[in-house]
Image (cartoon, rainbow, N blue to C red; front, side, top):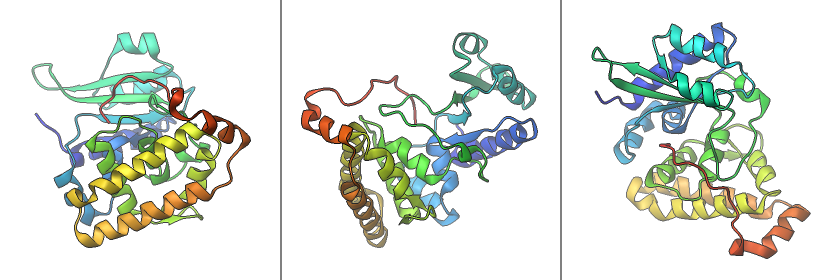
Amino acid sequence: MAVDFRQLASKASDLVDHGQTQGVPLRSVGGVAIWSSLPEELRAEYESVREGPKDLDLVAPEGTPAEDIKAVFVARGYVPDERLIAWRGNERHQYFELDENGDPVVDIDLFLGLPPACHRFDLPDEEFNRPGVALSVTELLLQKLQIVETTDKDLTDIAYLMLANPVSLNGSGIDDSRIAGLLSKDWGFHYTASRNLERVAAILDQKMDEASRQTTQDRIGALAGDLEEAPKSRKWKMRAKVGTRVTWYEEVEELDR
């Protein structure tokens, strides 16, 4: 049985709400989180140009006890991957919703901290205190900008985050001071993110009408300009001299994002 964005977003909301009652903060990430963050009038358009979700990704704060997390999921009827939790329970869990035949119909990946990344960064503490089911749009965008080998799904996700949210310095919408602050200290992350913004700009004709393309292009340009203008650290400048002659990112396992 296939599940769609709305169904998975509803399951995420249920788990986040139940986790809150148990003192286990959870937030959704990835495509389902991005769908949840969009205004209702953009959701159908996003679904029409983006491959559907295959699973649900959630995050919890690093250091959250594995048994506390597992209790939240079991209480909502999900079956844990006990072997994975025993092996990597301080980093990653997996849970399943099973049908009447015992076959999985929903897979849920739960990461303590952020999922594996080509460019690592830490979540601000307030991300788990803010209202809502998903991480903030700024953190969702950062997760997409750090991917080196982007797929069409990743580029579509970036495009619709940019379309739905203005770029600003005050934290309403996409907080470019947060993004520029991270990337001005890390040449590799800056290089990957800048390249991804260029890739998104190149596919907008396939994804949006003229008005939406122009809005998105303007916001991409604003963010790219802010990234270029932000003062760079000495470490950034030294690494820039080496460039891509040396690998600038971490290899990570493939995840369905």
